[in-house]
Every structure is written in C-alpha cells, then in structure tokens.
Amino acid sequence: MEAGYEDIYSNDSYIDSEIDGNRALVHMLYVPPHLRGQKQGTTVFKVFLSSLPAHVEVVRLKATALGSGDTLPFWLALGFTPAYAGGNEETRNILHLPVNGHSLPAVEELALDEERHYIFD
Image 1: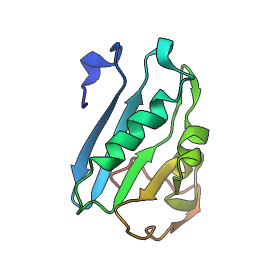
Image 2: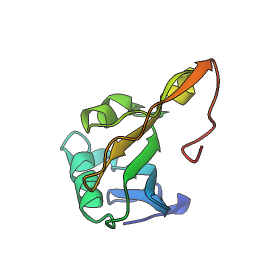
Image 3: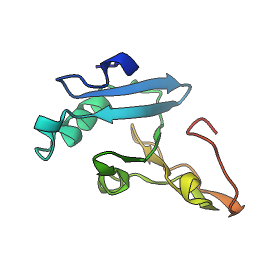
C-alpha cells in the first residue's frame, strides 16, 4: 500500500515507493509501534518485492536513523548493500538490492567526504 505523509501514523504497515525507470525507490517502510518486533517489516517488504514489475532491476533506498532507531541493520539483513564506496556517512547509507534476476549494480567510488544527496543520484 502506498501512503503519503498524512498517513505516516497509520494503524497498518506500508511502503511508500515509486518506480523510476528500471529502479524502485523506497521512500519509507512504516510499521506501527504495536506491530514492531513481529517481522511485519520483513513481511511487508517481501510482498512489495513480489509485486514489482519485471522491468525493475534494482530497489534503492536511504537507511536513516529514526525515533525507533537506526534502520541500516534491518536493510542490510534483507540483502541490501551500499551503492557507494567512500563518500560521507550519509552517502554510505544509500543502499541498493538487485531484483527480478538482475545483477547488482556497480558500486560507485566516491572521494572521501563526497556527497550524494538522495536515492535519485
């Protein structure tokens, strides 16, 4: 289910995403507090993966620290890897995952402290 900012505190889990060419960009995965720690996030993400169109080759997102903690370990456990090597800490949190039988995109080398602003870069 796609949701907007107004639905951030929904009683249901959801993924806010969009398709950008051959990429699926995940903006947010939300699990209500009462459902956390029950594998809801993993389940919602797997359903999302199974619904991707065949032309999508990669899922891309930026792991962030939220009120409930750092999301990086969650995404790494699902198989995501950094899209960039080097760069600053924020840039190292931009992750990607190959889907639909495609290979992992090349990891782009960045100069120390070089920055990418978001998942669209």
